Length: 180
Image (tube, rainbow, N blue to C red):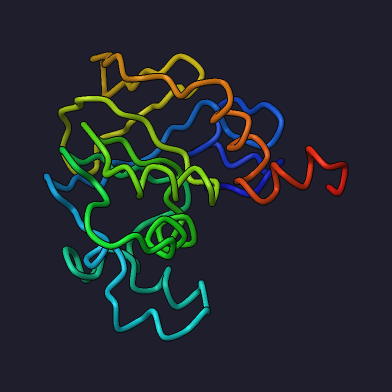
């Protein structure tokens, strides 16, 4: 995801507060049941170095992913994305690698919540595309566009959008308490 306020035309079309609500990026396509062990393999969890996690993101499915993904790219996946263990490092690894949003037919509940907590945008939508396609995600409308096809996804509830707007749950709570 592009830094707040940056004008990276590839990934940012419109932003409000801190969260980019319109994202345009290149698709990385994965199937069903992508588990957290392939998002960030357990052998890299002995460290708290988020850069290391980013360098090995999706290594279990595509060893070249971390070296080829670009800031603002979009993961498009099937059902049950993020299943497996409850490691918060999985969405952090994707965010650190530059992934702007994950679009999936469905998410494992714990991954869904962890993604929101760390500020990784996501949307549930049944999207068909190929690796390299240009994908536009409108978080505010809950839609995904691939080429000339528009897919209606599930829009995040306002309270979750607020957490994303603040950059994750910790930042959100700090703002609520007047500490940010």
